[in-house]
Image 1 (tube, helix red, strand yellow):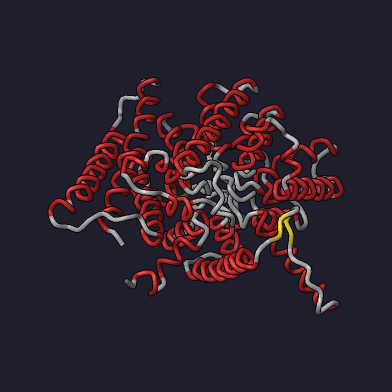
Image 2 (cartoon, helix red, strand yellow):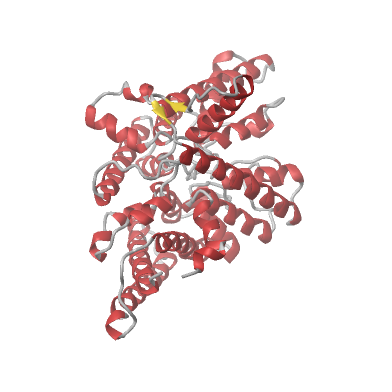
Length: 488
């Protein structure tokens, strides 16, 4: 490994994070807020830390610290893991100073924002300064596509390759695929798409009746599928079918592979969304769950008419499956099996290469196809029927990777759940707390149906670990715990 190079990259990211704090400072000045301390101190601290790491990494070889060399696979994994821990810590700083949270609560809130989980320990959002409200939304927006990918657009300044960072950061099973031949082009393409969707979403919210501030703020958490809001009542604050419609459209778009968006944009052919097997499976799955939930709400007479039930079912299902977590109703108290069904649906999540959480649709499709293949083998032991996704034959290495991920996912889920029970939660709340954290979802059941305020500090730290494991898809963190990673 190359510690000086790692320090140099982390220094760059700390500097970038410091620069992002100028946005909430600008919001504070626009709205006449006089206390800028919650942002000025973290801004100065981030810039100083980033400068020290950058200069140390730059001057080290000249002072006999060895050459930089090339960025290796192990360096990439370590940089990404350290970066997310570092950014969560720096991100907690303004929340301690501005909201008065304890260090553990602030770390939880910052990690929840950056991982786009959307779980919170804060109430009384409507009374908070707008600069702090915007800061929470900004955290989610930066974490949505991954600040690491943003850095990849600038990484050529370091004179090193960044593919190792991209492989460690990018969500989904197909991490080797790039949109453009050069990685820097891929990063820039992703962020142009991300910016374009955010701007379109903000415009849609504004035309639907939101104020400019709320429209921009909610666009940041919608396209990132984060779910933070500027109001305690979330999207339900507006009680507007038009606002909910805009939100549904952009939550679905954000949960579809950005690589597919890139191809559709280049070819100007929206029909490609339905031709892509993963996107098609995702949309069919969402429609099926909406249908089941709408039917149950109608049969149980939860709402006076079927249209109201369809409206609430559509918004809630899309919000949870895409791991956004916006709310218009208290779905945790819907009748029968609906709360559990919605939580299970959230495990599937969005498409690979999207900002959504969950296991990812492509993995679920592959696991299902492999399961059916094994059943067919029992009937026809000598038949050779490869697993296909669309017209593409899935190679054995990818299937092994998917099964390996699923096995580690379940082991991690069980261990975190047991730890949550040890931290004081009842079994249902512990299950929901881990599910909402590792799937980067937000809303839960039981004690964590609305927020994590009553969870112990130990439980919140378990949730932070689960959020980071889910955001980095487990392998990136667990590989650091293997002895072989540190050898050589």
